[in-house]
Image 1 (spheres, rainbow, N blue to C red):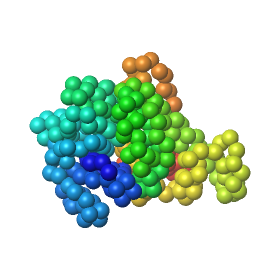
Image 2 (image 1 turned 30 degrees about the horizontal axis):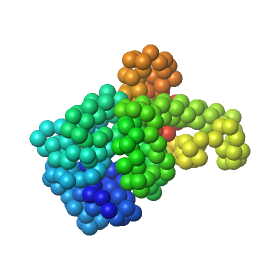
Image 3 (image 1 turned 90 degrees about the vertical axis):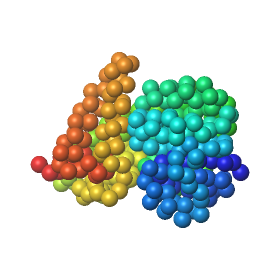
Image 4 (image 1 turned 135 degrees about the vertical axis):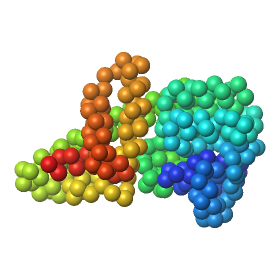
Amino acid sequence: MAKLAFLGLGVMGYPMAGHLLKKGGHDVTVYNRTAAKVQQWAKEHDGNSAPTPREAAKDCDFVMMCVGNDSDVRSVVYGDNGALAGMKKGAILVDHTTASAIVAREVHAKAKEKGIGFVDAPVSGGQAGAQNGQLGIMCGGEQPDFDKVKPALDLYAKSCALIGGPGAGQLTKMVNQIVIAGLVQGLAEGINFGKRAGLDMDRVFSVISKGAAQSWQMENRWKQMNEVKFDGFGFAVDWMRKDLGICLEEAKKNGARLPVTALVDQFYAQIQARGGSRWDTSSLMHLLAKD
């Protein structure tokens, strides 16, 4: 049994922290900016909580975090009440936030100055993946740190791999989001085309889902897209636009051309303008079905 902290109890962090306690049997302390979430989690899991990241991280072997963006990462990690101020030498900080490679390398350097390990470890699989312990975790960092923390990460992972040095996990997540953006747009166009051609879409997908066009997005989202229903489940458009913004900014630095990604990002901006900020990312279908 290890002593762990989990910082950030959003739709992903809440179940992930639960797996560490229930499946792993670890001593887990949680922190969240909204006290009500902390109280709910502690009651549900009979776990511990702390009022600041520093207090949650005190004496922990591993500290996991999953917050919103770069500025949230910095606010939780740095300062007198930040996680690094409470962590002991030899402990490892793991960041599951989807953030920039810049902040990952920055936090790695700051942690190393204090003798603390750091692994950037964004996840893929959505809320259902977090709840079922079936996330894909893409990691960046140093091999010894990854090896130490991997047994804990495996408690909520379907796959977990070290891709490269600090920031490599975040860069891999960018690849993931770039690919998904194109997949969802292609799926939306295919469904719209098939419906307008008068095809029975159940029969269509019973065939094409077994061939080269198959994808997670197809298997899990085509029916909702066919019905033009996007509310109350999945990965929100606001979050996707945040992620795609990170991808496009990184592409400016490394010279990669992302014409389709940039176009799909603007399609999502149109979804936001239609009031779909919290709709699932499959709502690209809305732009085609409602004309």
